[in-house]
Amino acid sequence: MRPFTYERAESASGAAKSAAETPGARFLAGGTNLLDLMKLEIERPAHLIDVGRLPLARIEETPDGGLRIGAVVSNSAAASDRRVRTRYPVLTHALVAGASPQLRNKATVGGNLMQRTRCAYFYDPAKPCNKRDPGAGCSALGGDARGNAILGASEACVAVHPSDMAVALAALDAAVETVAPAGRTRTIPIDALHRLPGETPHVETSLEPGELVTAVVLPPPPEGRQEYRKVRDRASYAGGLFSLALAGGRLALGAVALKPWRATQAEAALAAGATPAEAADAELAAARGTGRNAFKITLARRVVVDALEGGPTR
Amino acid sequence: MADPPVRAAPRATFQITVNGEARRVDVDLRTTLLDLLRETLGLSGTKKGCDHGQCGACTVLVDGVRINACLSLAVMHEGQQVTTIEGVGLPPDLSPLQRAFLERDAFQCGYCTPGQICSALGMLEEVRRGEPSQETLDLVAEIVPLTDAEIRERMSGNICRCSAYPQILEAIRDVAGPLGAGA
Image (cartoon, rainbow over all chains, first blue to last red; front, side, top):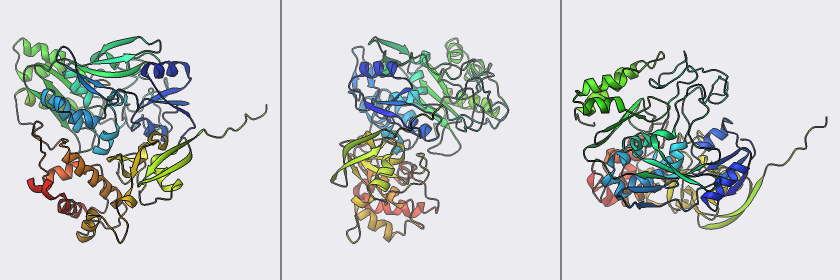
């Protein structure tokens, strides 16, 4: 691990200001992803701003009947909160489908959103990767890219976003609250937080330099069924090959793109009276495999159809 | 041109309570909680398996909650209470779960065992608090029945390469008491 300096933030706006003013600064919350990447020297921050003890660990009601989940609430605490479990079960199901209990106890809601891809080529410093080293090329293209993207990918990057939680947040139409270095706060719809790779896969979010996620805001729960499904190589503690979150009439897909994929084409088709199969086809018409991941298109179609038809979740 | 001066890596001095004993430590900032326990404090019961949060061998309890000590910086735990296997019990005063592991022969090489035991202790507390897992079908119920499937799922962050899983399950069930009534 490269040497770094360390500070414990005393306010969210102070943390954002320090991040903007200190070269090579990174926010540290749970650390479960960042420290792993620092050990591999894929992340090489010169300065860490520990935001883990900021007073952002509360879950509170919003005036419109939704919930605000502080950015440093642990994944376990968010999944276990009684209001989340009863009103947003898709979020609990998604959270407990991710990582291991030890990791969920440490990892935060904000950190979950900001975690980086698990693409094997991103994790291997011996291989070119446009995300790690812009312009170097993408080793996953033509490589063993079995888990990689089938939607929204580019010639520069075929990685997927690894979060389960974010897929549920996309189906719930959640938003993210942030504070910028100048102290300005704003609310970003979840769909606008993560970016597709295009030609700049190293730019992963729409956050400005130093901008800190302070909360996730859930609108009132939608009417209707909520469900999370995840398909993976083993039954527990594995990243998804495909996942799906249903919340009322909204559908989001996971492990298919570099962002949680809101299935707007399928939603529109369903609203116009399409069958589940037609809705799945509408969404997946643009899906492309890059070799060994082509099976994910068939997999995605089958899981989407089964979920929309109301098949058993296990 | 002269070489740039070699600067010592930044350090931190802080207090941390380990197994009930307040310790003042001075470490390189890069020191993980795991390395602090093993190398600085000489508590080698906590094991380093993968050092990347994948195996669970380094599981300890921080303020009663189980985490991977390898994926945390020591300095992040200033002022907190850490419990390692040495704090759970040392011969001859073993804890009920440690005795159950012996009675059930719940290990072969033993390398994952301290992590398994700390993880199981944290897991039982999570169940007492009613925290759900992906095996929990009824998210609204106050009480989570601790079935064998629940124990297996909740212990999936701890790998045993000798594959003593059936015996680990039995040992945990032995001490779960009324929690395991749903098994």
